[in-house]
Image (cartoon, rainbow, N blue to C red):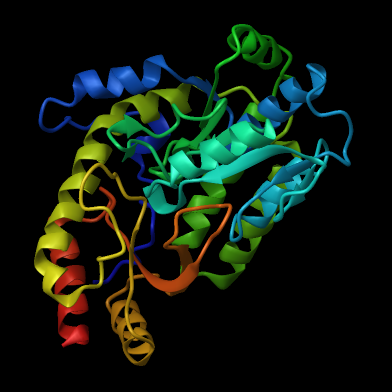
Length: 348
């Protein structure tokens, strides 16, 4: 593979003009519309978090910055930073805890029965972080429908500039979101989306100077994500054109990968059905992990060893090392086949 393959697709020239329409597979149009009908699109996943926290502050649920939100390990550091202006992120429950953030890592569901039972007992607000869970299920119920609020980060799934989504159960929450979007200053949406474009181009660039610049530009833009709450029309157009086929392709590839590697046992910790994976986190013994990562990287796959909660429980996590296997639509069928064969060959 001559090109670099990461966990997300590379932006194309057609994306800049909103022409990246893809044909849905397996009659998925109804499903896509169903997802969209329940979510308000906003400027980013971090923006969605900002809106929820602001709502909780205005309703008096969060009294001051010393109130706590219980969070999982291994969230992006900028997500923790986004919380700090409203509430204090903590990894342990205490008498100050008001909110429980449930992170469905890589699209695989947390144990919502145990989590909701605890939350009801302690009278906690439950916020589902569905940044990696576009269409996944827990006991045949879609993730993002269990908690009081749900956050989405659509631009993690495919290139659509910076775009997120939010939903909440309170009757006045939708109107609150619309009001917040109407306050967004002119121009900040453009700056946010430009920074995301430059960043996404930078991660695929072979120029170290451009990669450094694009990364710094993105970090700088994060300071306005709490204000750049309004989504651009172009971002929404790209999202709608890519959503349905992306879900189908990822599900198809996950099932294919499971079928080809089941005899190895590297996916035994994962649900077989009801999941649209952000990446496929495979478990490999320590003596083979380094060899497999090296083999994948030589094929142009940007991967490594990451931590994954196999307990699926923010209240009692058990993080173990896993290797990312990308499965998005930016990879051709031939490239995904090569990735699968590389895993099989390396494991042998």
